[in-house]
Length: 84
Image 1 (cartoon, helix red, strand yellow):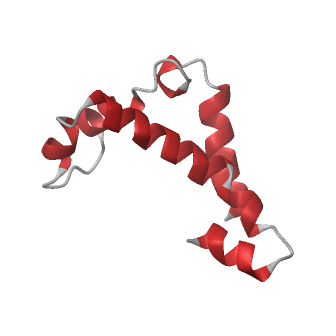
Image 2 (cartoon, rainbow, N blue to C red; image 1 turned 60 degrees about the vertical axis):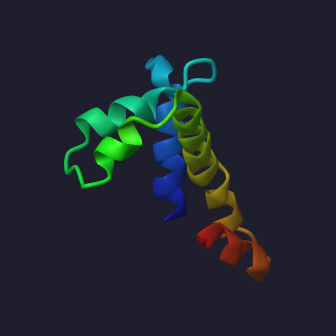
Image 3 (tube, rainbow, N blue to C red; image 1 turned 120 degrees about the vertical axis):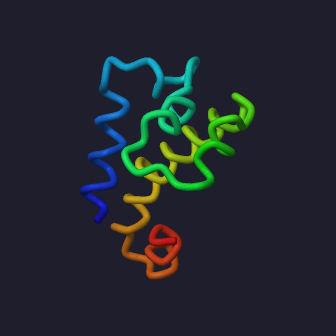
């Protein structure tokens, strides 16, 4: 799980797409328009403020680039935190 999550985060950081980079951070705005399986809340989230979408991208980066290292920690408490 740690390898998959870290890989997904690194791919986003290494991609030439500026939507995932600091400064733009608008990837989630476009995600709600183009997601493969939309749900009833997609329209609501699509029209959230731009600041919310930037927060979603930052949260995604933390989950995919920081949490995997917690999963690999020798301390049980940190592994549980990384899994949440």
